[in-house]
Length: 178
Image 1 (spheres, rainbow, N blue to C red):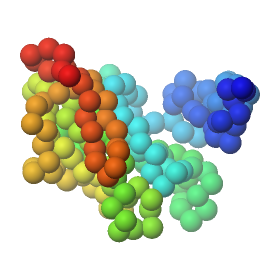
Image 2: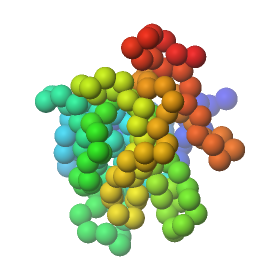
Image 3: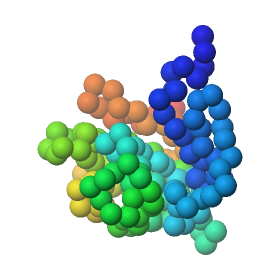
């Protein structure tokens, strides 16, 4: 089976490294005018909104941990000015890295995934249990006090299944978690 057959309709981009995936492989580009983040970062999360826009959340940068969020609007969005670029959104309430993020469709908007949850992670204060919610329509983050995890953790996986969000594994100050 041809590995590229399943992803031939998509383009993938390694931000700041100036490469783009377009079947049948990776291609170097001569410019980074489309798609360079405002802040270099690692240990962040990236989520797709409405199938075409991307949200990059938190992580660590040259100056330390980040609370910043950036939304990418592609060149193919004719209804919005300044497309093909990353736009700063509101900051998380707490900087975090090695956290989980998952899109949540509440069915209350025309955007297929109109909210994103940033779950737990780590910052200079230690391991986090808190959960924050991003609203795509406002670009704002809200701390969800009633949704904190029972056990603080970082470096875990998170999935959506049967309208439930499942946090799997990770680590905290006591060690590895099941």
